[in-house]
Length: 276
Image 1 (cartoon, rainbow, N blue to C red):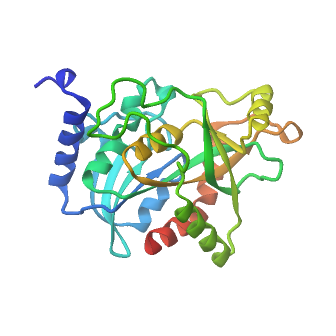
Image 2: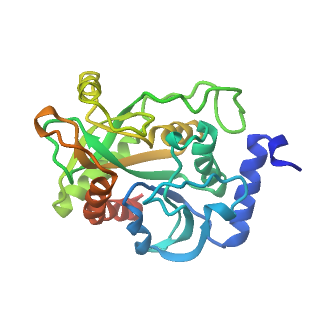
């Protein structure tokens, strides 16, 4: 049947069946790796790597630094599914397409979702290279749940009171303290991009309660919570949106800052997976 006539639920089932037939791995946790953070994939005992382009109904990103591959394997015997790269709203995809991989991961069996991203720092106490565990978010993008709701996927009005799981956050903070990793805490503001923010926008985001701003993560978390998946997200502060520290932002600089911080983020993710 032509894919334009399939429901989202049918597409999810087709994608999940294709992936399940490619590998015996039955994942318990999912990971989404953001800009410059793909090296974490090297920590995994990989069983199968599948380009997004080979998976039925999967969107394919063209953004540098996002490899666009789905990985299946184990970390210390823990079965995982990893998205090495993600899809962004600013690329012209719909919210349904952006969050589609999260829904497929749920149908493959994940219970927890770990997300990483590169973000601009709004909090004056932050410095480039800091890690921030997301305590909450402010969504300034279209909500991915707008439209007809399929009760097979989740409730019409899901609660976002604890979008980021308190137990997972507590474990991450304990791991960081044990390993001597500075882990900031804060609120992530999700925006569409692709432009970096103006100074007035940075000021506004700080005034409404933001500590970091980025172009991803929030839609994925909303859909994950809609489906009952526990979430934790860690941002790498790759640039600063502060008047006193302002300098022109480039994608190259942001990538390099994320790459430099990746080993610390990986250490926290590995510790989390071993304890949950």
